[in-house]
Image (cartoon, rainbow, N blue to C red; front, side, top):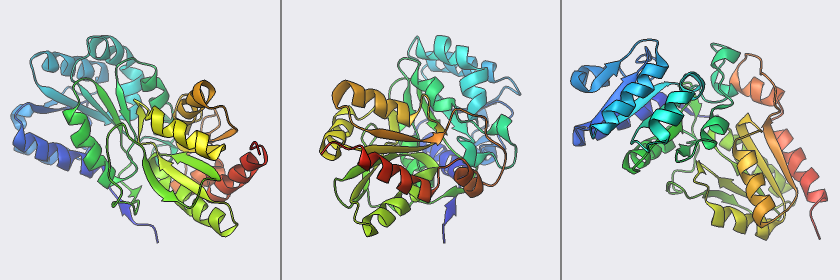
Length: 316
């Protein structure tokens, strides 16, 4: 059975640990302290907790001001409210001057919106953030990766965006594979017939598909691209060249996210057949995560079918 963790708690616990070590660490919320499980942080560090109310643009602008004073603010609220409602503040007040602001977006992906529906299913956030110069963009797969990613973006000088989930997020059984910001993780390596690029909360599905493909005689490599900006260009290009065929699988619109990043690199460095699985440029319905992902053809069987289809187009 799939085990579940809570990426929101993982984030806030890690930020609290960082705050114990560094008095510059600050949490900024927009009436979202309950969303990001931040009540303990607020009680422990009331002088380093700021809630601006339902005013996400203010939250980002406030964080920009804090950063100019040498503090390290983490703005945490729903992913879409950061990347859409406060997009101008992210771009102009934070990224343009290169300020040390960390943005943490909850409810990333369609699999995180079962309680609130399409208005709180944020499947455009990564594409939006990728287009803004100077922002590190990280998509952890589970609570363990969130802990590593939080520490990593804290150390990076400059703006960063990290996507977290709904609070009921599948645990990936790959903790033995180290996490390094900006570097892909190889989670499974049956062979080099095809490479499956993935990240976020669909990683377990991709691992299951790779195992099933292996039983059919198709040897796949599974690469977790948790940092989509800056992309690990050398390692990704090497896998494209070694395999000659790829499928990208993501809980995001196929436009602008992981699939776009891999396809763009492929066009520039190593053109090969690629199939992109994700939300096919449409608005999703509300529903339970597994059912939604299957409905929008991001299921294990869909990954297998896509891989077999791409292999037919692979150059011999």
